[in-house]
Image (cartoon, rainbow, N blue to C red; front, side, top):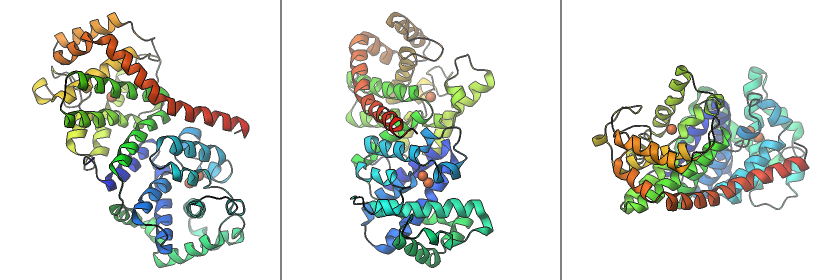
Length: 418
Ligand SMILES: [Fe+2]
Ligand SMILES: [Fe+2]
Ligand SMILES: [Fe+2]
């Protein structure tokens, strides 16, 4: 997939998760920076392995988006005392949904005492041990300010923290002036430079983008269901309308990421059971521009142009750019129809799902007013039952993984009384 470079897939993942909670992602970036320097100094991994590892280090607290909702600002608490929930959810998330399941246990073990960790048979346990050190360094140095002492964890050496890891950290902290660079923000440039060497295969890039779609579940599970439905409707329509393979592919990626800006919108607005106030509608609509900001300079425009036009309408009444029919291409128009279909066929917080006659009537009305593309709507209406049967089947298949992960989390949390 040439639509996005390896480095940019890393930056895109980071910037999208930043939308939910900037401080948590900044913590992830600082930890990734410190661990990358430690591993590079040690010279144990090849650059392509470091790419995967840096991605996992940056996302090591990804579980907290789900498990610490509302308490996410109290990082010191769940990072030092109640670390079980976010470690397990993050582990399951990477195990089931990421292209690097082998590294998922790094997340599971990132708070484990070294005394225990050293007995575990796991190839990447040193990475988990280093994250444990780096994250303590970050959390305590940022909360204690000038009171912070680099050697304050020395009493944990060999028990809670790895002794080798600690001495390696002291070494790189001095050599690379880690804390000065973190303070000045210079580490961000260095991390971006490290990202230049990242190499992800096309298959991995695809899986990371799919993983991003599941991140929508941190805001609301129904958004994941909706996104999967939209992607499947697009695929069916593209097939039915015999789009060339390249257009099918860009439509797939455009549909996959079209609503990622929603991660910046408060849950109360997304799941509101009542009609939104004009101010709230305005805020909700910013999700397209927000996505535009994040995708800019990372994703090739042929893909992002599809994603960013999903609320445009042929008569110029859409948003944010009020584009007209002639200014848009077929993949864009297919996504617009698929997005409306999804909104109609899936249940909403304020109403149940809609019978097919009503869905068809609304689509035809939109097409007759030149808001949705007539040929796309006709194709959909003509094969409504067949398309929707396949979409439901495919969507259920894709949701299986996500549901398994959430079920397993519930089982484990009951067992450990999280
Ligand atoms: Fe953590
Ligand atoms: Fe952390
Ligand atoms: Fe949207």
